[in-house]
Image 1: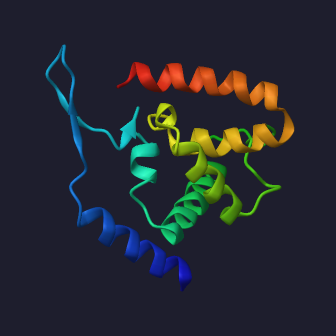
Image 2: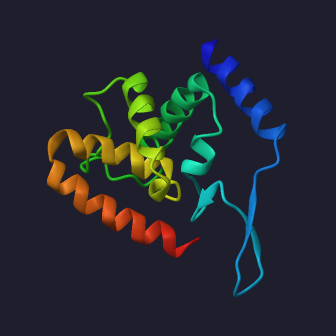
Amino acid sequence: MKLLVLAVAFCGVMLGQDPPYQVDPLTHSVSPIFETYGLNNGHWWIQMEGPLKAGYLMGAIDGILDSPGRDASKTLPWPSTLTFSEIVMRLDAFYSDKKNLNIPVIESACLQQVATLSAEKAAELLISFRLDANKNH
């Protein structure tokens, strides 16, 4: 029942708002800044309310783990040692740095797990994620 309430609330919030848009200066194409290569990013994240953020993360991880063709022998770097509330707090802090806003939420969430294992590896990934994300914006 809680999942249904979250889903209905999520749809209501998303349908009730027009996302901000950006114009590519070279192609003059218009695109929402809520996405980076088709995935919700930090611009989207900071617009959402707390309970919706946790619901999104739960749905995203379920979708990834249950996706067809997924190699079950490979583990997903998901913050299994952290609660969803802790992940939400970490992502809120992560996206308070404007340099991180274009990074997709799912990549940022996985980065939180890497950070619990190795700060050095997380720093390397963050640089890579920023470069990749900013190529699309």
